[in-house]
Length: 247
Image (tube, rainbow, N blue to C red):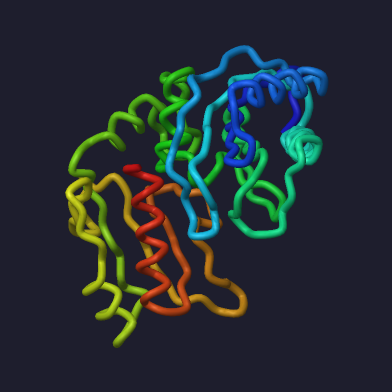
């Protein structure tokens, strides 16, 4: 995971004290830690994703050069978050600064510390849009298409999405399917329809796999696994996914 010099994409997000000045200060702080920022996207004002996220966000993506390992870069990003007052008291809660490593060359990594490529970058519009703005020809290492192509596919309206409900049974399955959000921006289609942009795959949470709002493994076939304790919780997660995709 180490090379003499690697290109990477890093996302920026903030909804506590967010401002263009903060973004500039963060880029300067990264430069002092040997992260050479070579390009930056426009700043976007976006809707919050997650029931605990708070108010609207300011989002952007940076292209940079880095000469260490992926885990070393992760440590730099986390140290920079702490420098700007990031506190991790509420999962996916309001934050002064959120820096995510999206891509590091064609590195594929799946550890308890780091997932590369970032498992949600390909369907989160507030990340994919800025990334495609500055690196449209960059290939997603797992999906085999460019970020520009993914962005164009995500922008289709209505957006074709599918639900794979095979891991839900009985009342959970029927309750979940009957309450799926129906909005003009989305067209629900068959899970085996090759035209679907993504397939949301709900399963029941267990002690080993607690409920999460976002995937825990990098996708290889545009599947988005969610783990739920109740059908109502599953619908809430789907609603948040739709905000991330279409908001």
